[in-house]
Length: 144
Length: 132
Image (cartoon, rainbow over all chains, first blue to last red):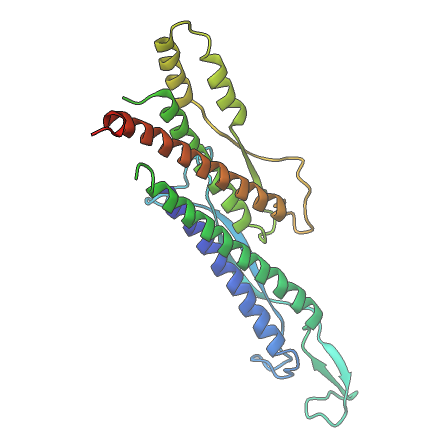
């Protein structure tokens, strides 16, 4: 049933957008963490999304002419390697010889903008799911 | 005993569902870099099928040719080469996709209502106009 495939596509998008939100949560929560897991300041995480054409049950990619479904997949979660934000604080235990402490490369404004984008995309996909469901239920009423 | 109206509405439901899938995929991929939005078109093909089969003279010949023509209507799915790109190479226009999706849903519901009316008429006839 194609309705279910549509729902699978929406499900993949919901999951991808939720992963983006989780990365943003982690970034905002660790905006001031000077000791990350690898010792240095926390590095902001970025989610890489990619499109995958829907495959049939044998793992073959369907003929592109009929292939109306394109799923979303989280390809990778990468760490932003850009440098941290130096703050002059000689008293800090992690200060370097010049008295600077390196804070994470997290920009709260950028994170908030990304959060709104992920949130809107999530909500839109929920709406599309409701519409798909209503269409399927309407079709069941034919001839009643 | 399919008639041409039911055959036409059946095909419309198929095509509308396909259009729904295309718009759904576009919306789902709205944040994926380099994803190219796809469009679907079948209005002209459907219209051509209906007009071309108006030519035969007898009602029965017209009925048969319409049924055959409608069944062969195919949708064209393509990437719009002129669609404006966002910074990440994605060409999905979220507002347009959502309005197209809403329009498509209304058209789908309309086809279902028409098909239901058609069946209701047939039922009415089968019950001898409801006089029992």
